Image 1 (cartoon, rainbow, N blue to C red):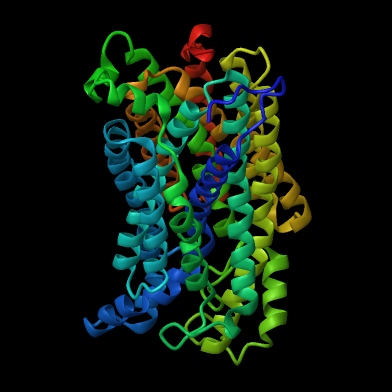
Image 2 (image 1 turned 45 degrees about the vertical axis):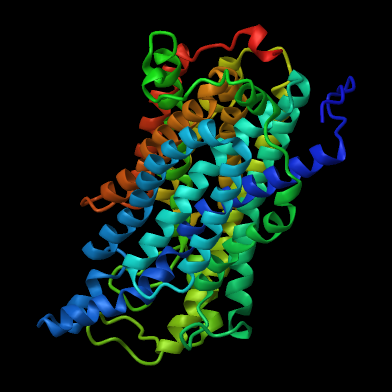
Length: 501
Protein backbone atom coordinates (compact mmCIF):
# COMPACT_ATOMS: atom_id res chain seq x y z
CA UNK A 1 0.00 0.00 0.00
CA UNK A 2 2.75 2.45 0.90
CA UNK A 3 5.05 1.82 -2.03
CA UNK A 4 6.98 5.03 -2.66
CA UNK A 5 5.70 7.06 -5.55
CA UNK A 6 7.83 7.55 -8.60
CA UNK A 7 8.78 11.03 -9.73
CA UNK A 8 5.54 11.20 -11.67
CA UNK A 9 3.63 10.62 -8.44
CA UNK A 10 1.24 8.22 -10.13
CA UNK A 11 2.73 4.73 -9.78
CA UNK A 12 -0.03 2.73 -8.07
CA UNK A 13 -0.31 -0.78 -6.72
CA UNK A 14 -3.16 -3.08 -7.75
CA UNK A 15 -4.98 -2.35 -4.49
CA UNK A 16 -4.59 1.38 -5.02
CA UNK A 17 -6.03 1.10 -8.52
CA UNK A 18 -8.98 -0.78 -7.03
CA UNK A 19 -9.45 2.01 -4.51
CA UNK A 20 -9.35 4.65 -7.24
CA UNK A 21 -11.87 2.66 -9.29
CA UNK A 22 -14.42 2.54 -6.48
CA UNK A 23 -13.85 6.21 -5.66
CA UNK A 24 -14.30 7.17 -9.32
CA UNK A 25 -17.54 5.16 -9.52
CA UNK A 26 -18.78 6.85 -6.36
CA UNK A 27 -17.94 10.35 -7.62
CA UNK A 28 -19.47 9.62 -11.03
CA UNK A 29 -22.79 8.46 -9.61
CA UNK A 30 -22.77 11.23 -7.01
CA UNK A 31 -23.25 13.76 -9.81
CA UNK A 32 -25.31 11.26 -11.82
CA UNK A 33 -27.91 11.29 -9.04
CA UNK A 34 -27.82 15.06 -8.49
CA UNK A 35 -28.26 15.92 -12.17
CA UNK A 36 -31.08 13.45 -12.64
CA UNK A 37 -33.85 15.63 -11.22
CA UNK A 38 -33.52 18.56 -13.66
CA UNK A 39 -33.84 16.07 -16.52
CA UNK A 40 -36.93 14.23 -15.28
CA UNK A 41 -38.84 16.85 -13.30
CA UNK A 42 -41.30 17.86 -16.02
CA UNK A 43 -42.45 14.37 -17.10
CA UNK A 44 -42.47 13.17 -13.49
CA UNK A 45 -44.68 16.10 -12.48
CA UNK A 46 -47.02 15.40 -15.36
CA UNK A 47 -47.38 11.72 -14.44
CA UNK A 48 -47.53 11.99 -10.64
CA UNK A 49 -49.78 15.04 -10.38
CA UNK A 50 -52.78 13.22 -11.91
CA UNK A 51 -54.10 11.88 -8.55
CA UNK A 52 -53.74 15.36 -7.03
CA UNK A 53 -55.66 16.89 -9.93
CA UNK A 54 -58.35 14.25 -9.47
CA UNK A 55 -58.66 15.19 -5.79
CA UNK A 56 -59.14 18.85 -6.70
CA UNK A 57 -61.81 17.95 -9.26
CA UNK A 58 -63.55 15.72 -6.70
CA UNK A 59 -63.58 18.71 -4.36
CA UNK A 60 -65.50 20.77 -6.89
CA UNK A 61 -62.81 22.48 -8.96
CA UNK A 62 -63.12 22.44 -12.73
CA UNK A 63 -60.93 19.99 -14.65
CA UNK A 64 -59.22 22.69 -16.71
CA UNK A 65 -58.56 24.90 -13.69
CA UNK A 66 -57.19 22.01 -11.62
CA UNK A 67 -54.97 20.82 -14.47
CA UNK A 68 -53.60 24.31 -15.02
CA UNK A 69 -52.31 24.45 -11.44
CA UNK A 70 -49.99 21.50 -12.18
CA UNK A 71 -48.78 22.65 -15.61
CA UNK A 72 -45.50 24.58 -15.96
CA UNK A 73 -46.20 28.08 -14.71
CA UNK A 74 -48.99 26.90 -12.39
CA UNK A 75 -48.79 27.63 -8.67
CA UNK A 76 -48.80 23.99 -7.55
CA UNK A 77 -46.26 23.01 -10.21
CA UNK A 78 -43.86 25.74 -9.09
CA UNK A 79 -44.33 24.79 -5.43
CA UNK A 80 -43.57 21.12 -6.01
CA UNK A 81 -40.55 21.87 -8.20
CA UNK A 82 -39.08 24.10 -5.49
CA UNK A 83 -39.80 21.42 -2.91
CA UNK A 84 -38.19 18.62 -4.92
CA UNK A 85 -35.08 20.71 -5.50
CA UNK A 86 -34.63 22.12 -2.00
CA UNK A 87 -36.02 19.70 0.62
CA UNK A 88 -33.80 16.73 -0.41
CA UNK A 89 -30.79 19.07 -0.35
CA UNK A 90 -31.76 20.30 3.12
CA UNK A 91 -32.27 16.76 4.44
CA UNK A 92 -29.08 15.59 2.74
CA UNK A 93 -27.12 18.46 4.24
CA UNK A 94 -28.29 17.80 7.79
CA UNK A 95 -27.87 14.02 7.67
CA UNK A 96 -24.70 14.45 5.61
CA UNK A 97 -23.22 16.43 8.50
CA UNK A 98 -24.04 13.52 10.79
CA UNK A 99 -22.51 11.18 8.21
CA UNK A 100 -19.30 13.21 8.24
CA UNK A 101 -19.16 12.85 12.02
CA UNK A 102 -19.71 9.10 11.64
CA UNK A 103 -16.89 9.00 9.09
CA UNK A 104 -14.54 10.25 11.81
CA UNK A 105 -16.02 7.88 14.42
CA UNK A 106 -16.51 4.63 12.47
CA UNK A 107 -14.01 4.86 9.64
CA UNK A 108 -13.95 6.06 6.06
CA UNK A 109 -14.48 2.76 4.23
CA UNK A 110 -17.52 1.58 6.19
CA UNK A 111 -19.41 4.85 5.83
CA UNK A 112 -18.45 5.18 2.15
CA UNK A 113 -19.87 1.74 1.40
CA UNK A 114 -23.13 2.41 3.25
CA UNK A 115 -23.61 5.79 1.57
CA UNK A 116 -23.29 4.39 -1.96
CA UNK A 117 -25.73 1.59 -1.19
CA UNK A 118 -28.18 4.11 0.31
CA UNK A 119 -28.34 6.40 -2.71
CA UNK A 120 -28.47 3.46 -5.11
CA UNK A 121 -31.47 1.90 -3.32
CA UNK A 122 -33.15 5.33 -3.07
CA UNK A 123 -32.79 5.78 -6.83
CA UNK A 124 -34.26 2.34 -7.50
CA UNK A 125 -37.28 3.06 -5.30
CA UNK A 126 -37.81 6.47 -6.94
CA UNK A 127 -38.34 4.80 -10.30
CA UNK A 128 -41.46 3.11 -8.90
CA UNK A 129 -42.92 6.22 -7.25
CA UNK A 130 -46.69 6.61 -7.61
CA UNK A 131 -46.95 9.95 -5.84
CA UNK A 132 -44.97 13.15 -5.59
CA UNK A 133 -44.67 12.61 -1.83
CA UNK A 134 -42.98 9.23 -2.28
CA UNK A 135 -40.70 10.63 -4.99
CA UNK A 136 -39.70 13.36 -2.52
CA UNK A 137 -38.94 10.73 0.15
CA UNK A 138 -36.76 8.73 -2.27
CA UNK A 139 -34.89 11.84 -3.41
CA UNK A 140 -34.17 12.61 0.26
CA UNK A 141 -32.61 9.15 0.65
CA UNK A 142 -30.56 9.73 -2.48
CA UNK A 143 -29.29 13.09 -1.24
CA UNK A 144 -28.35 11.70 2.17
CA UNK A 145 -26.29 9.00 0.48
CA UNK A 146 -24.67 11.41 -1.97
CA UNK A 147 -23.82 13.98 0.73
CA UNK A 148 -22.15 11.37 2.92
CA UNK A 149 -20.37 9.65 0.01
CA UNK A 150 -18.47 12.74 -1.11
CA UNK A 151 -17.11 13.43 2.37
CA UNK A 152 -16.14 9.82 3.11
CA UNK A 153 -14.50 9.33 -0.29
CA UNK A 154 -12.40 12.50 -0.13
CA UNK A 155 -11.16 11.79 3.40
CA UNK A 156 -10.43 8.16 2.45
CA UNK A 157 -8.41 9.05 -0.63
CA UNK A 158 -6.50 11.88 1.05
CA UNK A 159 -5.29 9.51 3.78
CA UNK A 160 -4.56 6.52 1.55
CA UNK A 161 -2.17 8.61 -0.59
CA UNK A 162 0.08 10.59 1.78
CA UNK A 163 2.52 11.68 -0.95
CA UNK A 164 1.57 15.24 -1.92
CA UNK A 165 1.88 14.91 -5.71
CA UNK A 166 0.26 11.48 -5.78
CA UNK A 167 -2.62 12.65 -3.56
CA UNK A 168 -3.31 15.71 -5.71
CA UNK A 169 -3.40 13.62 -8.88
CA UNK A 170 -5.56 10.88 -7.40
CA UNK A 171 -8.08 13.35 -5.96
CA UNK A 172 -8.07 15.44 -9.13
CA UNK A 173 -8.54 12.62 -11.62
CA UNK A 174 -11.00 10.52 -9.61
CA UNK A 175 -13.16 13.61 -9.08
CA UNK A 176 -13.03 14.24 -12.82
CA UNK A 177 -15.26 11.18 -13.11
CA UNK A 178 -18.03 13.29 -11.58
CA UNK A 179 -18.33 14.95 -14.97
CA UNK A 180 -18.37 11.54 -16.60
CA UNK A 181 -21.37 10.87 -14.37
CA UNK A 182 -23.07 13.98 -15.71
CA UNK A 183 -22.48 12.83 -19.28
CA UNK A 184 -23.71 9.36 -18.36
CA UNK A 185 -27.02 10.54 -16.89
CA UNK A 186 -27.68 12.70 -19.94
CA UNK A 187 -26.87 9.70 -22.12
CA UNK A 188 -29.08 7.42 -20.05
CA UNK A 189 -31.96 9.88 -20.31
CA UNK A 190 -31.42 10.00 -24.06
CA UNK A 191 -31.45 6.19 -24.28
CA UNK A 192 -34.52 5.96 -22.04
CA UNK A 193 -36.33 8.45 -24.28
CA UNK A 194 -35.31 6.50 -27.37
CA UNK A 195 -35.95 2.93 -26.24
CA UNK A 196 -38.57 3.31 -23.52
CA UNK A 197 -41.18 1.39 -25.50
CA UNK A 198 -38.83 -1.63 -25.64
CA UNK A 199 -38.24 -1.75 -21.87
CA UNK A 200 -40.47 -3.58 -19.37
CA UNK A 201 -43.62 -1.63 -18.54
CA UNK A 202 -43.86 -0.02 -15.10
CA UNK A 203 -47.46 0.35 -13.95
CA UNK A 204 -48.55 -0.54 -17.51
CA UNK A 205 -46.66 2.41 -19.00
CA UNK A 206 -43.30 3.04 -20.68
CA UNK A 207 -42.19 6.37 -19.19
CA UNK A 208 -38.60 7.38 -19.88
CA UNK A 209 -38.16 9.27 -16.62
CA UNK A 210 -38.74 6.12 -14.55
CA UNK A 211 -36.01 4.18 -16.35
CA UNK A 212 -33.62 7.10 -15.88
CA UNK A 213 -34.25 7.08 -12.13
CA UNK A 214 -33.85 3.30 -11.81
CA UNK A 215 -30.47 3.42 -13.58
CA UNK A 216 -29.07 5.09 -10.44
CA UNK A 217 -28.92 1.61 -8.86
CA UNK A 218 -25.96 0.68 -11.09
CA UNK A 219 -23.12 1.71 -8.69
CA UNK A 220 -24.30 -0.74 -6.04
CA UNK A 221 -23.48 -3.72 -8.27
CA UNK A 222 -19.65 -3.44 -8.47
CA UNK A 223 -19.49 -2.25 -4.87
CA UNK A 224 -21.08 -5.47 -3.59
CA UNK A 225 -18.34 -7.48 -5.32
CA UNK A 226 -15.34 -5.28 -4.51
CA UNK A 227 -16.17 -4.18 -0.94
CA UNK A 228 -14.30 -7.07 0.81
CA UNK A 229 -11.03 -6.07 -0.88
CA UNK A 230 -11.04 -2.38 0.13
CA UNK A 231 -8.69 -1.28 2.96
CA UNK A 232 -9.46 1.24 5.67
CA UNK A 233 -7.58 4.54 5.83
CA UNK A 234 -4.19 3.58 7.39
CA UNK A 235 -3.80 7.02 9.01
CA UNK A 236 -7.22 6.83 10.69
CA UNK A 237 -6.80 3.14 11.64
CA UNK A 238 -3.34 3.71 13.14
CA UNK A 239 -4.59 6.47 15.44
CA UNK A 240 -7.65 4.44 16.42
CA UNK A 241 -5.59 1.31 17.23
CA UNK A 242 -3.15 3.39 19.28
CA UNK A 243 -6.02 4.94 21.22
CA UNK A 244 -4.96 8.49 20.29
CA UNK A 245 -7.80 9.28 17.86
CA UNK A 246 -9.72 12.22 19.32
CA UNK A 247 -13.48 12.15 19.36
CA UNK A 248 -14.91 14.35 16.58
CA UNK A 249 -16.97 17.33 17.67
CA UNK A 250 -19.02 19.70 15.53
CA UNK A 251 -18.51 22.37 18.20
CA UNK A 252 -14.72 22.15 17.68
CA UNK A 253 -15.20 23.44 14.14
CA UNK A 254 -16.06 26.79 15.76
CA UNK A 255 -13.07 26.89 18.10
CA UNK A 256 -10.73 29.89 17.69
CA UNK A 257 -8.28 27.76 15.69
CA UNK A 258 -10.85 26.59 13.12
CA UNK A 259 -13.77 29.03 13.01
CA UNK A 260 -12.34 31.10 10.14
CA UNK A 261 -11.60 27.99 8.10
CA UNK A 262 -15.07 26.56 8.76
CA UNK A 263 -17.03 29.70 7.92
CA UNK A 264 -15.09 30.81 4.85
CA UNK A 265 -14.92 27.36 3.24
CA UNK A 266 -18.67 26.97 3.86
CA UNK A 267 -19.51 30.31 2.23
CA UNK A 268 -17.26 29.86 -0.81
CA UNK A 269 -18.37 26.22 -1.24
CA UNK A 270 -21.97 27.45 -1.25
CA UNK A 271 -21.13 29.99 -3.94
CA UNK A 272 -19.71 27.25 -6.20
CA UNK A 273 -22.92 25.24 -5.89
CA UNK A 274 -25.02 28.37 -6.35
CA UNK A 275 -23.61 28.82 -9.86
CA UNK A 276 -24.62 25.27 -10.75
CA UNK A 277 -28.04 24.93 -9.12
CA UNK A 278 -29.13 28.52 -9.52
CA UNK A 279 -28.43 28.58 -13.25
CA UNK A 280 -26.91 25.62 -15.09
CA UNK A 281 -29.24 22.99 -13.61
CA UNK A 282 -32.26 25.05 -14.65
CA UNK A 283 -31.38 24.73 -18.35
CA UNK A 284 -33.58 21.65 -19.03
CA UNK A 285 -36.66 23.56 -17.84
CA UNK A 286 -35.63 26.70 -19.72
CA UNK A 287 -35.25 25.05 -23.11
CA UNK A 288 -37.48 21.97 -22.72
CA UNK A 289 -41.15 21.64 -23.65
CA UNK A 290 -43.74 19.28 -22.22
CA UNK A 291 -47.16 20.90 -21.84
CA UNK A 292 -48.50 20.87 -25.39
CA UNK A 293 -51.85 22.61 -25.52
CA UNK A 294 -51.25 24.58 -22.32
CA UNK A 295 -51.57 28.38 -22.20
CA UNK A 296 -47.91 28.66 -21.20
CA UNK A 297 -46.44 26.37 -23.85
CA UNK A 298 -42.76 27.22 -23.85
CA UNK A 299 -39.39 25.86 -24.84
CA UNK A 300 -36.82 26.16 -27.58
CA UNK A 301 -38.37 26.40 -31.08
CA UNK A 302 -36.10 23.65 -32.49
CA UNK A 303 -37.21 21.26 -29.75
CA UNK A 304 -40.89 22.10 -30.24
CA UNK A 305 -40.61 21.59 -33.99
CA UNK A 306 -38.70 18.30 -33.62
CA UNK A 307 -41.16 16.94 -31.07
CA UNK A 308 -44.20 17.84 -33.18
CA UNK A 309 -42.54 16.14 -36.14
CA UNK A 310 -41.98 12.98 -34.09
CA UNK A 311 -45.50 12.73 -32.63
CA UNK A 312 -47.46 13.80 -35.70
CA UNK A 313 -50.22 16.36 -36.11
CA UNK A 314 -52.38 17.32 -33.13
CA UNK A 315 -55.91 15.97 -33.06
CA UNK A 316 -58.13 19.04 -33.19
CA UNK A 317 -58.07 22.06 -30.89
CA UNK A 318 -58.28 22.32 -27.12
CA UNK A 319 -61.49 24.29 -26.50
CA UNK A 320 -60.22 25.63 -23.18
CA UNK A 321 -56.97 27.11 -24.53
CA UNK A 322 -57.48 27.42 -28.27
CA UNK A 323 -54.18 25.59 -28.82
CA UNK A 324 -53.53 22.30 -30.66
CA UNK A 325 -54.77 19.32 -28.67
CA UNK A 326 -52.64 16.17 -28.47
CA UNK A 327 -54.01 12.77 -27.58
CA UNK A 328 -52.61 11.03 -24.45
CA UNK A 329 -50.36 8.70 -26.49
CA UNK A 330 -49.02 11.69 -28.40
CA UNK A 331 -48.30 13.56 -25.17
CA UNK A 332 -46.32 10.60 -23.82
CA UNK A 333 -44.34 10.35 -27.06
CA UNK A 334 -43.77 14.11 -26.98
CA UNK A 335 -42.43 13.86 -23.44
CA UNK A 336 -39.97 11.08 -24.34
CA UNK A 337 -38.87 12.89 -27.51
CA UNK A 338 -38.29 16.13 -25.59
CA UNK A 339 -36.32 14.25 -22.90
CA UNK A 340 -34.05 12.87 -25.59
CA UNK A 341 -33.31 16.24 -27.19
CA UNK A 342 -32.88 18.16 -23.94
CA UNK A 343 -30.51 15.49 -22.59
CA UNK A 344 -28.34 15.93 -25.67
CA UNK A 345 -28.08 19.67 -25.04
CA UNK A 346 -27.52 19.57 -21.28
CA UNK A 347 -24.80 16.91 -21.57
CA UNK A 348 -22.54 19.70 -22.79
CA UNK A 349 -22.30 21.16 -19.30
CA UNK A 350 -20.56 17.98 -18.18
CA UNK A 351 -18.47 17.71 -21.34
CA UNK A 352 -17.18 21.16 -20.43
CA UNK A 353 -17.00 20.14 -16.78
CA UNK A 354 -14.84 17.13 -17.62
CA UNK A 355 -12.41 19.40 -19.45
CA UNK A 356 -12.44 21.87 -16.54
CA UNK A 357 -11.87 19.17 -13.91
CA UNK A 358 -8.94 17.82 -15.94
CA UNK A 359 -7.46 21.30 -16.20
CA UNK A 360 -7.78 21.80 -12.44
CA UNK A 361 -6.17 18.40 -11.79
CA UNK A 362 -3.15 19.56 -13.83
CA UNK A 363 -2.95 22.98 -12.18
CA UNK A 364 -3.40 21.56 -8.65
CA UNK A 365 0.09 20.00 -8.59
CA UNK A 366 1.76 23.31 -9.48
CA UNK A 367 3.16 25.67 -6.87
CA UNK A 368 0.16 27.99 -7.03
CA UNK A 369 -1.73 29.37 -4.05
CA UNK A 370 -5.08 27.71 -3.40
CA UNK A 371 -6.92 31.01 -3.55
CA UNK A 372 -5.46 31.81 -6.96
CA UNK A 373 -6.17 28.29 -8.22
CA UNK A 374 -9.86 28.77 -7.39
CA UNK A 375 -9.92 32.27 -8.88
CA UNK A 376 -8.71 30.94 -12.24
CA UNK A 377 -12.23 29.48 -12.63
CA UNK A 378 -14.30 31.51 -10.17
CA UNK A 379 -13.86 35.04 -11.55
CA UNK A 380 -14.53 34.12 -15.21
CA UNK A 381 -17.61 32.16 -14.02
CA UNK A 382 -18.94 35.28 -12.32
CA UNK A 383 -18.72 37.14 -15.62
CA UNK A 384 -19.85 34.40 -18.01
CA UNK A 385 -22.68 32.45 -16.30
CA UNK A 386 -25.04 35.37 -15.49
CA UNK A 387 -24.39 36.85 -18.95
CA UNK A 388 -25.25 33.56 -20.73
CA UNK A 389 -28.51 33.06 -18.86
CA UNK A 390 -29.60 36.67 -19.21
CA UNK A 391 -28.92 36.34 -22.92
CA UNK A 392 -31.07 33.18 -23.02
CA UNK A 393 -33.83 35.17 -21.34
CA UNK A 394 -33.85 37.74 -24.12
CA UNK A 395 -32.66 35.82 -27.18
CA UNK A 396 -33.28 32.07 -26.71
CA UNK A 397 -35.81 31.78 -29.54
CA UNK A 398 -33.26 33.27 -31.94
CA UNK A 399 -30.35 31.14 -30.71
CA UNK A 400 -29.57 27.77 -32.26
CA UNK A 401 -29.24 24.70 -30.05
CA UNK A 402 -25.63 24.38 -31.25
CA UNK A 403 -24.78 27.80 -29.84
CA UNK A 404 -26.54 26.94 -26.58
CA UNK A 405 -24.48 23.74 -26.35
CA UNK A 406 -21.23 25.66 -26.79
CA UNK A 407 -22.21 28.29 -24.23
CA UNK A 408 -23.33 25.76 -21.64
CA UNK A 409 -20.09 23.85 -22.25
CA UNK A 410 -18.12 27.00 -21.41
CA UNK A 411 -20.20 27.46 -18.25
CA UNK A 412 -19.43 23.85 -17.34
CA UNK A 413 -15.67 24.40 -17.68
CA UNK A 414 -15.78 27.35 -15.31
CA UNK A 415 -18.29 26.05 -12.74
CA UNK A 416 -17.98 22.26 -12.52
CA UNK A 417 -14.19 22.47 -12.17
CA UNK A 418 -14.68 24.31 -8.87
CA UNK A 419 -16.19 21.18 -7.33
CA UNK A 420 -12.90 19.31 -7.85
CA UNK A 421 -11.05 22.16 -6.15
CA UNK A 422 -12.86 21.44 -2.89
CA UNK A 423 -11.95 17.77 -2.89
CA UNK A 424 -8.27 18.69 -3.17
CA UNK A 425 -8.40 21.62 -0.73
CA UNK A 426 -10.56 20.65 2.25
CA UNK A 427 -8.53 17.62 3.48
CA UNK A 428 -5.54 19.97 3.90
CA UNK A 429 -7.18 22.38 6.33
CA UNK A 430 -8.86 20.08 8.88
CA UNK A 431 -7.08 17.66 11.29
CA UNK A 432 -7.52 13.88 10.92
CA UNK A 433 -10.02 13.49 13.75
CA UNK A 434 -12.17 16.30 12.30
CA UNK A 435 -11.53 15.75 8.60
CA UNK A 436 -14.86 14.10 7.83
CA UNK A 437 -16.80 16.47 10.11
CA UNK A 438 -15.16 19.60 8.70
CA UNK A 439 -15.53 18.47 5.09
CA UNK A 440 -19.14 17.59 5.77
CA UNK A 441 -19.99 20.97 7.25
CA UNK A 442 -18.50 22.86 4.30
CA UNK A 443 -19.81 20.50 1.63
CA UNK A 444 -23.24 19.73 3.07
CA UNK A 445 -24.30 22.82 4.98
CA UNK A 446 -22.48 25.09 2.53
CA UNK A 447 -22.84 23.29 -0.78
CA UNK A 448 -25.88 21.05 -0.43
CA UNK A 449 -28.08 23.33 1.71
CA UNK A 450 -27.08 26.96 1.11
CA UNK A 451 -25.72 26.32 -2.39
CA UNK A 452 -28.57 24.25 -3.78
CA UNK A 453 -31.04 26.73 -2.25
CA UNK A 454 -30.13 28.78 -5.33
CA UNK A 455 -32.52 26.53 -7.28
CA UNK A 456 -35.31 27.45 -4.85
CA UNK A 457 -34.55 31.16 -5.25
CA UNK A 458 -34.42 30.95 -9.06
CA UNK A 459 -37.71 29.04 -9.21
CA UNK A 460 -39.35 31.54 -6.84
CA UNK A 461 -38.15 34.61 -8.75
CA UNK A 462 -39.39 33.06 -12.00
CA UNK A 463 -42.98 33.25 -10.69
CA UNK A 464 -42.87 37.04 -10.44
CA UNK A 465 -44.57 39.09 -13.14
CA UNK A 466 -42.14 40.03 -15.91
CA UNK A 467 -39.61 37.37 -14.90
CA UNK A 468 -38.78 34.09 -16.58
CA UNK A 469 -36.57 31.26 -15.32
CA UNK A 470 -33.56 32.24 -17.43
CA UNK A 471 -33.53 35.81 -16.11
CA UNK A 472 -34.05 34.62 -12.54
CA UNK A 473 -31.17 32.17 -12.96
CA UNK A 474 -28.89 34.95 -14.20
CA UNK A 475 -29.65 37.10 -11.14
CA UNK A 476 -29.26 34.28 -8.62
CA UNK A 477 -25.98 33.06 -10.14
CA UNK A 478 -24.66 36.61 -10.12
CA UNK A 479 -25.44 37.14 -6.43
CA UNK A 480 -23.86 33.83 -5.39
CA UNK A 481 -20.85 34.55 -7.58
CA UNK A 482 -20.20 38.00 -6.08
CA UNK A 483 -20.41 36.60 -2.54
CA UNK A 484 -18.00 33.79 -3.43
CA UNK A 485 -15.41 36.02 -5.08
CA UNK A 486 -15.41 38.40 -2.10
CA UNK A 487 -15.23 35.61 0.51
CA UNK A 488 -12.32 33.90 -1.30
CA UNK A 489 -10.13 36.79 -0.11
CA UNK A 490 -10.23 35.20 3.37
CA UNK A 491 -9.89 31.56 2.25
CA UNK A 492 -7.06 30.06 4.37
CA UNK A 493 -3.94 28.84 2.61
CA UNK A 494 -2.92 25.33 3.82
CA UNK A 495 0.38 25.18 5.64
CA UNK A 496 3.11 23.71 3.52
CA UNK A 497 4.00 21.15 6.18
CA UNK A 498 0.38 19.93 6.11
CA UNK A 499 0.59 19.37 2.38
CA UNK A 500 3.65 17.17 2.71
CA UNK A 501 2.52 15.28 5.79
